Amino acid sequence: MTILCYHSVECGWESPLAVEPDAFLQQAAWLQRHRRLLPLADALPRLDASGRLPSGEAALTFDDGFAALHEHLLPVIRRTGLPATVFLVAQTLTPQGQPVDWVDTPGTKPLTTLTLDQILEMQDAGVDFQSHSWAHLRLTELSEAECVTDLRDSRELLSDLLGRPVTLLAYPRGLHQAHVRRAAERAGYTHAFALPEGREEPEDFAVPRVGIYRGNGQLALRIKAARPYLPVRTSERFASTARRAKRALRGRPWH
Ligand SMILES: [Zn+2]
Image (cartoon, rainbow, N blue to C red; front, side, top):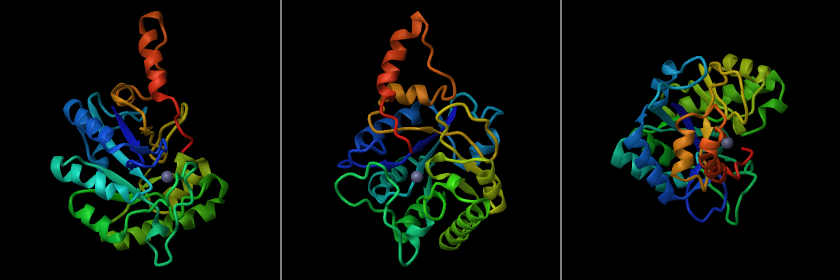
């Protein structure tokens, strides 16, 4: 019933953004058994007015394009055909590049992003790549004109490099406001994805996703993949599930 948002899949980076490879394998297997996983473009027309997919359906997205996805996501996709969309920060693919300077919990060794060769290899294996802006700035702090430039530059560079149209955007940190949503549309996108912390009005330029973070176990995944936009029930009957869910969901980062 929802669109899930991962970041990296790797060990050795102690961050909520890095799901352990073993945990990811278990989650992917659970999702494939219990959910119909849709390519993101196929999921969009199926969203209802509240931004949810029909019961039993889900889609997988990955923000930031971390290099570890080549090692830990690509083999799973080759083996299972699982559909996935990765949102790339365009400036990381320019000749001068961009270091991963936007992460609040960077860990001990420098983080790297996918190279163009790795991206094209993953695209050949069926991975869908879309835009996560030009430079991972907080778009809400830019003017509308600055947002249009950032988002258009990203869409155009990525379309060129990938050799296919890029029409979807994931807002950096999920942050958006009315002028950011207008800019996304003016920059040529058809939809943009958020990461709502609370209730947000869903629309084409604020499609809700649910973040999956390190330490989220099977129970958290089940809850998040089932009823993401409702509070966990806290009546007596559900109190124990709620307590376990809260433990599993604890430590949600601001990203
Ligand atoms: Zn991001």
